[in-house]
Amino acid sequence: MNNDKKGFITRSLHTSFPKDDAYNALHMPVYDGVAYEFDNAEEIAETFAGKRFAHAYSRTSNPTVEYFEKKMLAVTEARAAIALASGMAAISNVLLSLVEQGGNIVASHHLFGHSYALLKQTLPSLGLEVRFVDMTDHSAVKAATDEKTRVYFFETITNPQLEIVDLSKLSVLAKDKGVAVVCDSTITPPYVFQSKRFGVDIEVMSTTKFISGGAAAFGGVVLDNGTFDYLKLPALKEWAVKYETNALVARIRKEVFRHLGGSMTAHTAHFMNLGLDIMPLRIERCVENCKKLALFFETHKQVVSYNYPGAAGSKGYKLAQMQFNGMPGAVMTFDLESKEACYRFFDRLKVIRKATNLNDNKTLIIHPESTIYAEFSDEEKKAMGVRPTMMRLSVGIEECEDLIKDFEEALQ
Ligand SMILES: *Cc1c(COP(=O)(O)O)cnc(C)c1O
Image (cartoon, rainbow, N blue to C red):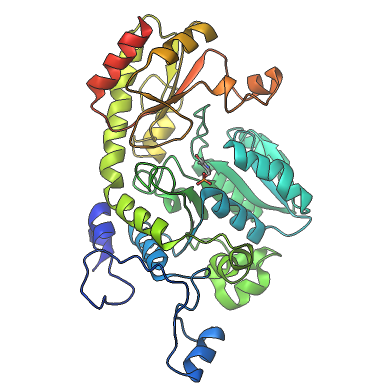
């Protein structure tokens, strides 16, 4: 099939299996087994020597997981993909594979909490330096970069600040400095964001969120656009001699991932395979709901302010139109007059669910200041734009009238 001419859903649904199924199954079967047999000594020796590809042991590769990787390649412009146990496994494997001891990462100061902790605690303990900056401040990024900078790491839309990096500017700087652009696009997955067109070299995602659909299973994926020259990186130089633009995924698969054991299970890959097919339908519905909710917030007198980059009045609107096709995910925030008002409203909700996750099919709400950011000082919270009056909403696919009714009743 010529992928260039087909739409996202068609490509996802009709990705051919890596091998013909013995029973002509229409869905990729779940290969739950661990080990795979070989016919003879020569075959097994050649496989172990890397001269031919065959599955041998499911921690390093598995047919159902391979199919999910193949689907991710079919719906994107990436050149190489590897699926892992979680979003955190994807992020940690990528950074550990790209950066050598003594090398540094320039990262956004606004990150998903566990990513922040990985960069603040774990990576420095292994001798990787991390410099946190405001990634939307071009001169700050430039000033933090030196000859030992290997990676720019940031999220396409930060949460809960909902800030957006101007990728056209950042990618020019990265090319100039020989730095790899690595973005976490969990909340703007491939259907709304074509990372290669904006100069991103490597994309990491938690597939737990939009891709799994309905928060059915944990997972992560790494997509390499094949745009970075890995000969420039001390950590990948030797791999690049052999694997060229595939050096990163080769090192992850043959070394870091294999040795740390962060593999995705076949069952999880099955959920991801199903979830990816209908993700575009779900995202379109979520975005439509967000836009309707923005209009509701606009007119409701108890809502002091709101933020959704897909709404014309919001700060990130212009960049969101350009970089995310006008579909900048489904996370929005709004402020009520006080923390007490937030709590009162929260406790009265009946349809919207009180939980911390993102991009479930269900609409979820949380008061970030007293939960996700509870362990930070007031000063740190302020620097992170986390206000006591702010609520965060992850909008799902319910009929919007039901969400608005729930809001109206809880705000009374
Ligand atoms: C959830 C999330 C992660 C971590 O993903 P897990 O699958 O929970 O490990 C990373 N980045 C972002 C932006 C997320 O929302």
